[in-house]
Length: 307
Image 1: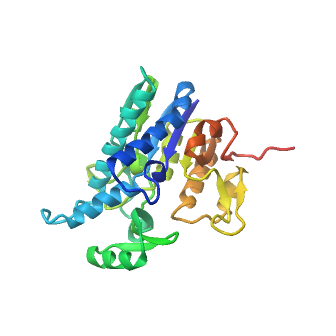
Image 2: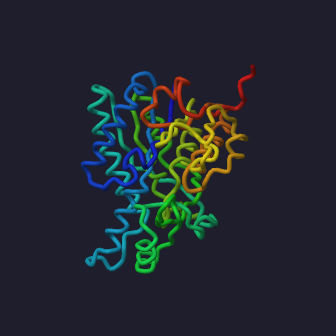
Image 3: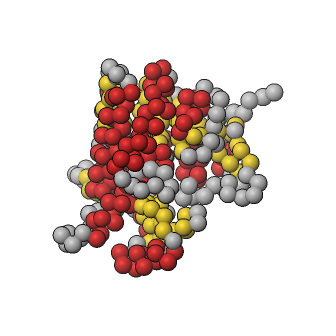
């Protein structure tokens, strides 16, 4: 079975953790352990988030007195894709001796007239108390929004149209290679209508929506979205959350999940199932094997079981 695995940003750097390299390496060791059993039985393509990492690099870039201007988000995205891709590739190499592993820096085409470019919604960086977030926003010209009990920077997040390296990824899969790609949703680019020349975009693409598109283009059988909760919950964060263990795209869309957290994951799962007739699931990283085998997580499928 061909599976596209989308690792949430919290799988690589949990809330409240210091963004040190040693911390991220420890978390990636946990990732490799969680998915190694799947890799023994299935073809895998792994994508990952980069929200905490790109936010850290953006802060460092904005504060660097040696720069006349901060690095744009597309280049910072490329840096995080290379860094996280290298960590994943090395760790998976150690966990899967003899398996071919490739980490591919990937570009994702977006529309230059996407209205999302004028409406920042994608959380990046760390969570701050409001009394710290507001001065930072004024100093650096950020947009900020509430995230749980704190505040974070938000940036534009246009819809992914096409992953430019899809054919290369397909060829790598066909040769038996486990591929790490489209990290952080891929580096956002637009293409000139006349020449096809690529230009970077000041944005961060949602990695779950890119994963759904990639899974569709690769004709994957299963889209596995891994995060820090065991399944989708209706009323998450309330006094009476209700687990959703079996769902159709319709049911997920009626859940009204927050745009900055579970919303894109639910939409990505719904799109993949609708467009391909395949299966998708959302659940906890440590239960990856159990989710694929129907013993954990929220399963999303075209039709509910009868009886």
